Length: 188
Image (tube, rainbow, N blue to C red):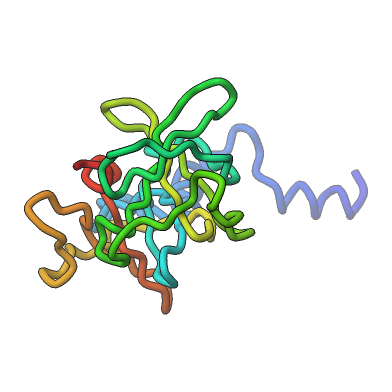
């Protein structure tokens, strides 16, 4: 056996050698119980409404779509923008800015007098108990992962009535995310 082979043999463990304690040490466990379980982050889809950051749990989002042509529904509730045809499926499209008191009334976005939607505007198709529904957002900023320690309950000043759609605040670095309950945000 060459000198080099002897050095390698001294460096690596032999198959019959007991090294279980070293593997535990390398994995970060010295045999003592772990002090706290690791936090599992939850993913949220972040978006902007009137310049503010909002987010909904990613599990509630079915898809993100460019704003399709909307058909206005006469005498509909104030936040209902109209219905949209998404690959043959008719879905209601809502503007939750009214519900969040970011706007007095929903803008005219359906019909012949409606201006084209802004370039960054998107429709979030959300899963709800009553079926999928679209929500108009000013822009989608991306997916953010928030651990439970990054979440705080909603301050009383953010509550919007008896059916609160703001469920908390998420902090990630300098950015605050207003966390919404999709069901409550779309409730009439």
